[in-house]
Length: 162
Image 1 (cartoon, rainbow, N blue to C red):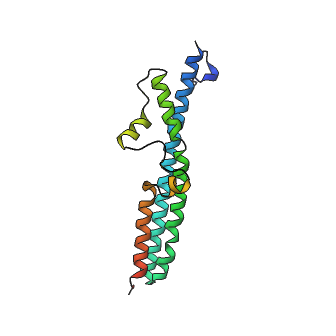
Image 2: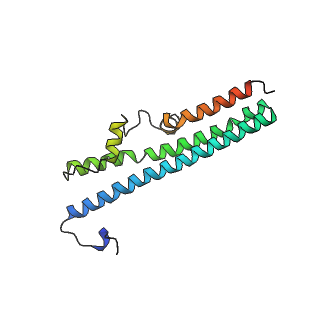
Image 3: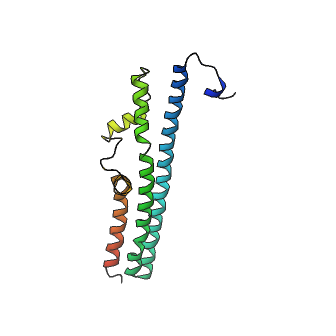
């Protein structure tokens, strides 16, 4: 069974064609946002694994300097994850716009994946401040775990390991 696409079927009107394109774009954007989430979890897992290795080595060698140098691991992954979050957020305004178009111009009750998520979690599709630093690196869903990792490594480097 072949997939029906705008390229291989006839339409009754341009409105029908436009509706199909808008729905396809919407679900493409939603899948892209979810793909970014999957990659962000991989980045976070790698960062935690690297931090754990630095902690284990510092404890094994009883060297506070190793823990201090180990702070570079979560810092690196923090910046990397911040970049991914910043790029992901670039899709948010279009997802919101597509939902608005489908509801107002086509009188559909959905899709509302993005809008409902925004409403439930009291978020906005536009960041308060723009740019990689504010939108990615200082995004609370990004920085909290890395601050905890760095804080633990700094504590470990200060405490005399005996």
